[in-house]
Every structure is written in C-alpha cells, then in structure tokens.
Image (tube, rainbow, N blue to C red; front, side, top):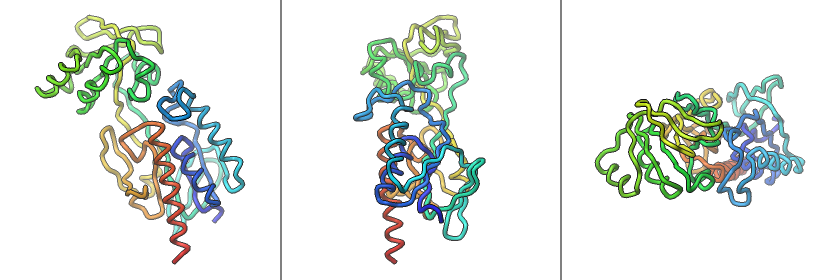
Length: 301
C-alpha cells in the first residue's frame, strides 16, 4: 500500500483529521474535490482564532501547514469510487488512477437543497442563512425572518430574537402548536401565515419578502434550514449504514468516529446533524486520533 490512511475531503474536518495522522508520522493521502459546503459564505464565524476569516483562506492555510510535513500527499481531485478489497481500501480518483490504504476517513460533506422560492438560492450564505451562531451577529439588530421548512423550525424561531426582531413564516407547512405559540409569543416573535413567494432587493442583500397575499415584509436576513444529502456517494459505495438526521441522512458512527464498515471513519457534516466549522474541525481531530489508534492496535496484535 502506498498510504496507511486516505482522507477524502479537504474542508475543516478532513484537514483536521489529516493533521493528527501526519503528526503521528503516518503516510497520509488527502484528496480534495475543491467544492466545500461553505464556499458560498464570505467568512467563517465563531471559530476560535479564525473568526471572520474566509473559509477558503482557512483551508488554504491548513493545506500550507500540512504540506510542511514530509509524510503527507495533498491531491486536488475527485474520488469517484471507493471499495474494500481484501484487507485494504481502494479509491479511484478521476483522471488519476487508483490509490490504496489500510484506513479511510470520509470528510465528504453534504449538499443543500433550498426551498424553491425565487430569490432564495442566490442569497444563500449572505442574507439567507442557516445558523445564527455562525452568522447571527453580523445581521443583529435588523429585521430577521425564519422560514418554516421542517418540524424544528418553531424551535429555531425561538432562538433568533436574541439577534433581532423576528418574524416566523409558517409557509403554512408547519403551524406551531399551542405550546410553541405561547413560547414564540413570550419571545416576541411575530407569526406570518401568508407564504413567502419572492425575496426582494439587490442580491445578495435582502430588503423584503413578498407574500402570497401581495403584502411585503421588510427583512434584512432570513434563516432557513435546507434539506441535506450526501455530497459524495463514497459512504454508500462502501456499504456504510446511515441514520436519519434532523435535515437529511447522516453516516452512522460510533463514539470513536468509525462507521459500520470496519476501518472506515467519518467526520464533519456528513456524520452529524449539528453543523459548524468548529464542530467539523473537532470531529476531524477525533477521527484522526481514533484512526491512528486503530492502526496501532492492529500492529500490536
């Protein structure tokens, strides 16, 4: 085998996993397709030491630091297939042949599907946002909205008033129950039951939303939780089990970040329903550490 570990994915999770392994002096290949989920955001927030930095800059510096270690290979490319052959894993890279390793770490991320409302997708990551902890401070003090598109939307709407005056748009897919209505009222959240049909303003900024009844509601930003799917077929190809997360499927992992397939570990948004740069990086660290320990234990038997 050319490598002991192949890390698929070069965002926060994959880079963090690779750092632990290369510092443990293992032979590591990191393959990055260059299409991270956070590519639509101008800056990453809430990430200690990196607050306000562009995601591309954080990843670029991470790769630069990794490249200083002699036992890692960084490859820009797309893995199109992964399979287990006997006691090793074989990955096929588009236009780059095959590579083999004893372990795999999947940091392949997820893709987002937004509600089909005119003006929404082009503002994604700018004034259409998914996480108040990641982006709330930057829009605080303005008129904020929460677009209901999943059963947890009312809970999200209860959080947002800490950042600004909040309107909850039921769409009318997810009408709050009596307890939720009471809590939303206590938090000062306005309820709007006429559906949003269009976002208005000079994109990527948001000025207002147009409702089905013809009214417009001024807004500076709106929060929405997109439906998610695996950004890569690798986990499915390998036979990994999945769990149904809050917004879409997630790779099933144990406490040691190992999937249902022995020797395959997973980290980042693909393996968790809680999404942030900090959490992705932390999960990558753990995946790298546990992956290294599995190699150690194998050699000790």
